[in-house]
Length: 321
Image 1 (cartoon, rainbow, N blue to C red):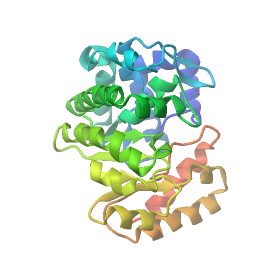
Image 2: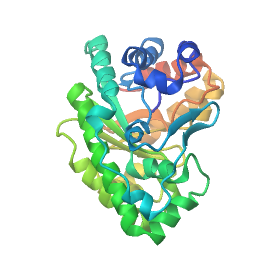
Image 3: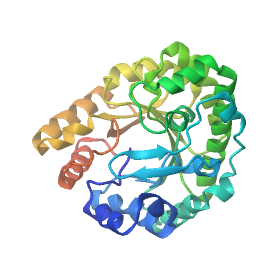
C-alpha cells in the first residue's frame, strides 16, 4: 500500500517545496519520496511514488490537485460525445518522468529491496474522469455505464490499453513487481463488475510483460473477490473489511494474498497493534504466499513510530525464510 505521505515529516518538508503534481513530475524529488519510507521504516519493498491520474493528463481534461480535496477534473467525461472525442493516450511522451523515477529508485536501492510500481485500474480512473473527482455514489459513472454502454466500453478500452503500456514501461525501467489499484470498484455489484469491468482488467493484465508479479487490489470488494481472481493477477490484495482466512479460501490457496490490517489500528498503542498484527498472521496460518500489509494506505495522522513498530512486529512474528 501507499508508504509515502503526510504522516512522514520528510514528506511534508518536500511538499512545502513542491506542489503535488510538480513533485510527481520531478524524478529526483519523486525518487527521494519513494525512498524515504524504506530508510525510515525498514519495509521489505519500496512502492513507487506517483499518482493514479497522471496518465490521463494527456487527455486534456484539466487535472488539478486542490489542497485538502484531492484530484479535480475540470472537464469531466459525462456523455457519449465526450468519450468520442478522446484520443489514445501516448504514455511514452505523456509520463516519461515516471519511468525516470523508477530508474533512479532502482539504482539507489541497489538490490537491497525490490521496487513495486503501480497504476490505477480502469474503473477507478474512469470514475474520476466521469465524476470530476471523488464521489460517494458514483451516479454519473453508473449513468454512463447503463445508458451508454458502448461509450463506457470505449473509455475502458482506452484506459486499459494505456495502463498496460504504463505498467510495462515501469517494468522495463526496472520495477520488479507492479500493483493495479481499483480503489472505488467496491461500489459495483458482481453483475456490473462482470459486465462492465472484468473484460477490460483481464485484457490489461494479459498485456503485461511476463515475469513481473502483479498485485490486483480493490477496496470494498468482499463480494467481488472471485471475479477479481478471474480477471487475473498473481496476488489478490485484501482490504480490512474481510477476514483474511475467509477471503483467501474464497480466491483459492493456489494464489497469493496481500493484506489486511485496518490502517486505523496504527492510531492505537503499539501493544494493541501487536495483538491485531498477530490476528492477521494467525488467519494467514503460516501458508506460503501471504504478504503482510495494511488494508489500504497509511492514514495522514498516523504516528511514524507506530508504523515502524508494526514493521518490527511483523518481522519478529513472521517466518522470513
